[in-house]
Amino acid sequence: MSLLPFFEWCEGLAVGEAIRNSLWLFPVIEAFHLVGLGVMGGAVLLVDLRLLGLGLKGRSVAQLSKDAQPWMLGSLVMMLASGIPLFLSEAIKCYYSTAFWVKMTSLLLVIVFTFTVRRRAALEATSTPVLEGKIAALVSLALWAGVGWGGRWIGFS
Amino acid sequence: MSLLAFFERLADSSWSIGLHESRYAYPLVESVHVWALFLFVGFAVMFDLRLLGWIMRQVPVQEVYRRLLPWTVAGFVIMVVSGALLFSAIPLRTYQNIFFRFKVILLLLAGLNVWVFNSRVYRRIAQWNLDGVTPKAARAAGALSLVLWFGIIFSGRMIAYNWFDCDRQPQAAIVNFLTSCVPVESLY
Image (tube, rainbow over all chains, first blue to last red; front, top):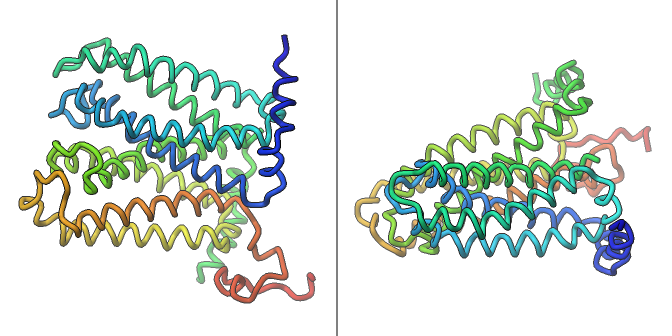
Protein backbone atom coordinates (compact mmCIF):
# COMPACT_ATOMS: atom_id res chain seq x y z
CA MET A 1 0.00 0.00 0.00
CA SER A 2 1.32 3.39 -0.91
CA LEU A 3 1.61 6.11 1.71
CA LEU A 4 1.21 8.78 -0.94
CA PRO A 5 -2.53 9.39 -0.27
CA PHE A 6 -1.70 9.99 3.40
CA PHE A 7 1.04 12.48 2.45
CA GLU A 8 -1.38 14.20 0.06
CA TRP A 9 -3.92 14.46 2.86
CA CYS A 10 -1.18 15.99 5.11
CA GLU A 11 -0.29 18.50 2.43
CA GLY A 12 -3.92 19.60 2.22
CA LEU A 13 -4.24 20.50 5.92
CA ALA A 14 -4.75 24.13 6.89
CA VAL A 15 -1.57 24.30 9.01
CA GLY A 16 0.68 23.53 6.06
CA GLU A 17 -1.34 25.85 3.85
CA ALA A 18 -0.81 28.72 6.31
CA ILE A 19 2.96 28.08 6.42
CA ARG A 20 3.17 27.90 2.62
CA ASN A 21 1.32 31.19 2.30
CA SER A 22 3.58 32.95 4.76
CA LEU A 23 6.93 34.43 3.83
CA TRP A 24 8.56 34.09 7.24
CA LEU A 25 6.68 31.33 9.07
CA PHE A 26 8.76 28.47 7.62
CA PRO A 27 12.22 29.81 8.56
CA VAL A 28 11.01 30.98 11.99
CA ILE A 29 9.58 27.54 12.82
CA GLU A 30 12.78 25.99 11.47
CA ALA A 31 14.88 28.20 13.75
CA PHE A 32 12.91 26.87 16.75
CA HIS A 33 13.54 23.38 15.36
CA LEU A 34 17.30 24.09 15.37
CA VAL A 35 17.21 25.50 18.90
CA GLY A 36 15.51 22.26 19.97
CA LEU A 37 18.29 20.33 18.22
CA GLY A 38 20.90 22.27 20.20
CA VAL A 39 19.28 21.50 23.56
CA MET A 40 18.82 17.89 22.50
CA GLY A 41 22.53 17.74 21.61
CA GLY A 42 23.57 18.73 25.11
CA ALA A 43 21.14 16.37 26.84
CA VAL A 44 22.14 13.42 24.62
CA LEU A 45 25.90 14.05 24.70
CA LEU A 46 26.06 14.43 28.50
CA VAL A 47 24.97 10.80 28.80
CA ASP A 48 26.54 9.32 25.66
CA LEU A 49 29.99 10.77 26.36
CA ARG A 50 29.78 9.49 29.94
CA LEU A 51 28.86 6.01 28.65
CA LEU A 52 32.06 6.23 26.59
CA GLY A 53 34.01 7.20 29.72
CA LEU A 54 34.35 10.85 28.63
CA GLY A 55 32.91 14.21 29.68
CA LEU A 56 31.63 14.34 33.28
CA LYS A 57 33.64 11.29 34.38
CA GLY A 58 33.21 12.01 38.09
CA ARG A 59 29.43 11.45 37.92
CA SER A 60 27.47 8.25 37.56
CA VAL A 61 25.72 7.61 34.26
CA ALA A 62 22.46 7.06 36.15
CA GLN A 63 22.66 10.49 37.78
CA LEU A 64 23.54 12.30 34.53
CA SER A 65 20.82 10.43 32.72
CA LYS A 66 18.28 11.53 35.35
CA ASP A 67 19.51 15.16 35.14
CA ALA A 68 19.40 15.22 31.34
CA GLN A 69 16.04 13.46 31.02
CA PRO A 70 13.66 16.47 31.34
CA TRP A 71 15.75 18.50 28.88
CA MET A 72 15.88 15.61 26.43
CA LEU A 73 12.11 15.14 26.63
CA GLY A 74 11.45 18.87 26.52
CA SER A 75 13.61 19.37 23.44
CA LEU A 76 12.04 16.32 21.79
CA VAL A 77 8.59 17.88 22.28
CA MET A 78 9.91 21.19 20.89
CA MET A 79 11.39 19.45 17.85
CA LEU A 80 8.21 17.48 17.15
CA ALA A 81 5.99 20.53 17.72
CA SER A 82 8.06 22.49 15.17
CA GLY A 83 8.98 19.60 12.86
CA ILE A 84 5.41 18.38 12.23
CA PRO A 85 4.15 21.76 10.94
CA LEU A 86 7.26 22.04 8.72
CA PHE A 87 6.47 18.59 7.33
CA LEU A 88 2.82 19.47 6.77
CA SER A 89 3.86 22.47 4.67
CA GLU A 90 5.74 20.28 2.17
CA ALA A 91 4.51 16.72 2.73
CA ILE A 92 4.53 15.65 -0.93
CA LYS A 93 8.05 16.96 -1.46
CA CYS A 94 9.08 14.95 1.62
CA TYR A 95 7.43 11.81 0.23
CA TYR A 96 9.76 11.93 -2.77
CA SER A 97 12.84 12.93 -0.74
CA THR A 98 15.35 10.19 0.15
CA ALA A 99 16.78 12.45 2.86
CA PHE A 100 13.34 12.65 4.51
CA TRP A 101 13.07 8.86 4.72
CA VAL A 102 16.64 8.56 6.05
CA LYS A 103 15.73 11.09 8.71
CA MET A 104 12.42 9.47 9.70
CA THR A 105 13.97 6.00 9.86
CA SER A 106 16.85 7.29 12.02
CA LEU A 107 14.43 9.24 14.21
CA LEU A 108 12.14 6.27 14.80
CA LEU A 109 15.12 4.02 15.56
CA VAL A 110 16.79 6.53 17.89
CA ILE A 111 13.57 7.12 19.86
CA VAL A 112 12.96 3.39 20.31
CA PHE A 113 16.65 2.78 21.07
CA THR A 114 16.82 5.64 23.61
CA PHE A 115 13.86 4.40 25.64
CA THR A 116 14.91 0.73 25.56
CA VAL A 117 18.57 -0.29 25.10
CA ARG A 118 20.19 3.05 25.98
CA ARG A 119 17.95 3.53 29.01
CA ARG A 120 18.89 0.10 30.35
CA ALA A 121 22.57 0.75 29.60
CA ALA A 122 22.38 3.97 31.62
CA LEU A 123 20.64 2.31 34.56
CA GLU A 124 23.03 -0.63 34.67
CA ALA A 125 26.19 1.38 34.01
CA THR A 126 29.04 1.09 36.48
CA SER A 127 31.64 3.79 37.12
CA THR A 128 34.01 2.24 34.60
CA PRO A 129 32.53 2.10 31.12
CA VAL A 130 31.61 -1.30 29.72
CA LEU A 131 31.51 -2.36 26.10
CA GLU A 132 27.70 -2.56 26.01
CA GLY A 133 27.42 1.02 27.23
CA LYS A 134 29.97 2.25 24.71
CA ILE A 135 28.15 0.55 21.86
CA ALA A 136 24.82 1.99 23.06
CA ALA A 137 26.36 5.49 23.08
CA LEU A 138 27.88 5.11 19.62
CA VAL A 139 24.61 3.77 18.17
CA SER A 140 22.72 6.68 19.73
CA LEU A 141 25.18 9.25 18.33
CA ALA A 142 25.23 7.62 14.88
CA LEU A 143 21.43 7.66 14.72
CA TRP A 144 21.27 11.32 15.81
CA ALA A 145 23.87 12.13 13.16
CA GLY A 146 21.56 10.47 10.63
CA VAL A 147 18.64 12.58 11.87
CA GLY A 148 20.66 15.80 11.52
CA TRP A 149 22.11 14.85 8.15
CA GLY A 150 18.75 13.78 6.72
CA GLY A 151 17.08 16.90 8.09
CA ARG A 152 19.56 19.23 6.47
CA TRP A 153 19.46 17.42 3.14
CA ILE A 154 15.66 17.59 2.84
CA GLY A 155 16.30 21.23 1.99
CA PHE A 156 18.71 20.36 -0.81
CA SER A 157 16.37 18.06 -2.75
CA MET B 1 41.92 46.73 0.10
CA SER B 2 38.43 47.21 1.50
CA LEU B 3 36.48 44.25 2.85
CA LEU B 4 34.04 44.62 -0.02
CA ALA B 5 36.82 44.50 -2.62
CA PHE B 6 38.36 41.51 -0.86
CA PHE B 7 35.08 39.58 -0.84
CA GLU B 8 34.50 40.53 -4.50
CA ARG B 9 37.83 38.94 -5.38
CA LEU B 10 37.07 35.93 -3.19
CA ALA B 11 33.69 35.54 -4.92
CA ASP B 12 35.46 35.41 -8.29
CA SER B 13 37.97 32.77 -7.17
CA SER B 14 37.72 29.22 -8.43
CA TRP B 15 37.63 28.03 -4.80
CA SER B 16 34.49 30.02 -4.03
CA ILE B 17 32.71 29.20 -7.28
CA GLY B 18 33.70 25.55 -7.02
CA LEU B 19 32.37 25.17 -3.48
CA HIS B 20 29.18 27.10 -4.25
CA GLU B 21 28.39 25.00 -7.29
CA SER B 22 29.54 21.64 -5.92
CA ARG B 23 26.97 18.86 -5.82
CA TYR B 24 28.11 17.38 -2.49
CA ALA B 25 30.79 19.53 -0.85
CA TYR B 26 28.57 22.50 0.00
CA PRO B 27 25.70 20.44 1.48
CA LEU B 28 28.29 18.36 3.35
CA VAL B 29 29.80 21.46 4.96
CA GLU B 30 26.25 22.56 5.88
CA SER B 31 25.70 19.18 7.54
CA VAL B 32 28.97 19.51 9.47
CA HIS B 33 27.75 22.94 10.65
CA VAL B 34 24.52 21.32 11.92
CA TRP B 35 26.38 18.41 13.58
CA ALA B 36 28.72 20.84 15.32
CA LEU B 37 25.66 22.82 16.50
CA PHE B 38 24.46 19.63 18.23
CA LEU B 39 27.77 19.50 20.15
CA PHE B 40 28.63 23.15 20.65
CA VAL B 41 25.23 24.71 21.32
CA GLY B 42 24.32 21.57 23.27
CA PHE B 43 27.13 21.96 25.78
CA ALA B 44 26.98 25.76 25.85
CA VAL B 45 23.30 25.42 26.80
CA MET B 46 24.05 22.74 29.41
CA PHE B 47 26.62 25.00 31.09
CA ASP B 48 24.24 27.98 30.98
CA LEU B 49 21.52 25.84 32.53
CA ARG B 50 23.92 24.79 35.29
CA LEU B 51 24.67 28.47 35.99
CA LEU B 52 20.93 29.06 36.27
CA GLY B 53 20.60 26.08 38.61
CA TRP B 54 18.22 24.29 36.25
CA ILE B 55 20.32 21.16 35.72
CA MET B 56 22.98 19.16 37.64
CA ARG B 57 22.57 21.31 40.75
CA GLN B 58 24.50 18.83 42.86
CA VAL B 59 27.50 18.89 40.48
CA PRO B 60 30.08 21.62 41.30
CA VAL B 61 30.12 24.33 38.63
CA GLN B 62 33.89 23.98 38.23
CA GLU B 63 33.53 20.28 37.46
CA VAL B 64 30.96 20.98 34.74
CA TYR B 65 33.18 23.78 33.37
CA ARG B 66 36.36 21.71 33.24
CA ARG B 67 34.83 18.51 31.90
CA LEU B 68 32.69 20.13 29.22
CA LEU B 69 35.01 22.94 28.12
CA PRO B 70 37.32 20.89 25.83
CA TRP B 71 34.27 19.48 23.99
CA THR B 72 32.63 22.89 23.78
CA VAL B 73 35.81 24.45 22.39
CA ALA B 74 36.19 21.62 19.86
CA GLY B 75 32.57 22.13 18.78
CA PHE B 76 33.13 25.87 18.47
CA VAL B 77 36.23 25.38 16.29
CA ILE B 78 34.27 23.09 13.94
CA MET B 79 31.43 25.65 13.82
CA VAL B 80 33.83 28.49 12.93
CA VAL B 81 35.73 26.47 10.32
CA SER B 82 32.56 25.12 8.65
CA GLY B 83 30.93 28.54 8.92
CA ALA B 84 33.93 30.23 7.30
CA LEU B 85 33.81 27.67 4.48
CA LEU B 86 30.11 28.37 3.94
CA PHE B 87 30.86 32.09 3.89
CA SER B 88 33.67 31.60 1.38
CA ALA B 89 31.26 29.85 -1.00
CA ILE B 90 28.93 32.89 -1.14
CA PRO B 91 31.07 35.73 0.24
CA LEU B 92 29.70 38.87 -1.36
CA ARG B 93 26.01 38.16 -0.84
CA THR B 94 26.59 36.95 2.71
CA TYR B 95 28.75 39.95 3.61
CA GLN B 96 25.92 42.27 2.60
CA ASN B 97 23.17 40.11 4.11
CA ILE B 98 21.42 41.85 6.99
CA PHE B 99 20.89 38.63 8.96
CA PHE B 100 24.56 37.67 8.62
CA ARG B 101 25.58 41.07 9.98
CA PHE B 102 23.16 40.72 12.87
CA LYS B 103 24.56 37.24 13.56
CA VAL B 104 28.14 38.55 13.65
CA ILE B 105 27.12 41.25 16.15
CA LEU B 106 25.41 38.67 18.36
CA LEU B 107 28.50 36.42 18.11
CA LEU B 108 30.70 39.28 19.26
CA LEU B 109 28.31 39.95 22.16
CA ALA B 110 28.38 36.24 23.07
CA GLY B 111 32.19 36.40 23.06
CA LEU B 112 32.11 39.52 25.23
CA ASN B 113 29.75 37.74 27.62
CA VAL B 114 32.19 34.81 27.93
CA TRP B 115 35.07 37.22 28.50
CA VAL B 116 33.24 39.15 31.23
CA PHE B 117 32.11 35.89 32.84
CA ASN B 118 35.62 34.41 32.84
CA SER B 119 37.46 37.52 33.95
CA ARG B 120 35.03 38.69 36.66
CA VAL B 121 32.53 36.05 37.74
CA TYR B 122 34.33 32.75 37.25
CA ARG B 123 37.50 34.12 38.85
CA ARG B 124 35.78 33.85 42.21
CA ILE B 125 34.45 30.36 41.50
CA ALA B 126 35.83 29.06 44.82
CA GLN B 127 33.20 31.11 46.65
CA TRP B 128 30.19 29.65 44.81
CA ASN B 129 31.44 26.41 43.23
CA LEU B 130 29.07 24.23 45.24
CA ASP B 131 26.01 26.50 45.07
CA GLY B 132 22.96 24.87 43.49
CA VAL B 133 21.80 28.31 42.45
CA THR B 134 24.77 30.50 41.53
CA PRO B 135 25.27 34.23 42.30
CA LYS B 136 23.22 36.75 40.37
CA ALA B 137 26.10 37.71 38.04
CA ALA B 138 26.65 34.08 37.02
CA ARG B 139 22.94 33.54 36.42
CA ALA B 140 22.82 36.71 34.35
CA ALA B 141 25.74 35.46 32.22
CA GLY B 142 23.96 32.13 31.72
CA ALA B 143 20.65 33.74 30.79
CA LEU B 144 22.32 36.23 28.44
CA SER B 145 24.24 33.42 26.75
CA LEU B 146 21.00 31.46 26.17
CA VAL B 147 19.30 34.50 24.65
CA LEU B 148 22.31 35.28 22.43
CA TRP B 149 22.68 31.72 21.09
CA PHE B 150 18.95 31.61 20.43
CA GLY B 151 19.35 34.82 18.39
CA ILE B 152 22.46 33.50 16.64
CA ILE B 153 20.64 30.35 15.51
CA PHE B 154 17.69 32.46 14.36
CA SER B 155 19.71 34.96 12.36
CA GLY B 156 21.94 32.17 11.01
CA ARG B 157 18.91 30.36 9.63
CA MET B 158 17.63 33.60 8.07
CA ILE B 159 20.82 34.24 6.06
CA ALA B 160 19.30 31.99 3.39
CA TYR B 161 16.61 34.62 2.72
CA ASN B 162 17.27 37.49 0.33
CA TRP B 163 14.43 39.80 1.43
CA PHE B 164 16.81 42.64 2.25
CA ASP B 165 19.58 41.86 -0.24
CA CYS B 166 21.33 44.55 -2.23
CA ASP B 167 20.18 43.17 -5.59
CA ARG B 168 16.55 43.48 -4.50
CA GLN B 169 15.64 47.14 -4.71
CA PRO B 170 13.94 49.34 -3.73
CA GLN B 171 14.73 48.85 -0.05
CA ALA B 172 14.25 51.24 2.84
CA ALA B 173 17.22 53.59 3.21
CA ILE B 174 17.97 52.13 6.64
CA VAL B 175 18.24 48.62 5.13
CA ASN B 176 20.71 49.77 2.48
CA PHE B 177 22.66 51.57 5.15
CA LEU B 178 22.83 48.51 7.41
CA THR B 179 23.93 46.27 4.53
CA SER B 180 26.33 48.90 3.14
CA CYS B 181 24.50 48.58 -0.13
CA VAL B 182 24.82 51.19 -2.86
CA PRO B 183 22.01 50.37 -5.28
CA VAL B 184 22.84 50.79 -8.95
CA GLU B 185 20.13 53.23 -10.07
CA SER B 186 20.26 52.39 -13.75
CA LEU B 187 19.22 48.79 -13.07
CA TYR B 188 15.82 49.72 -11.70
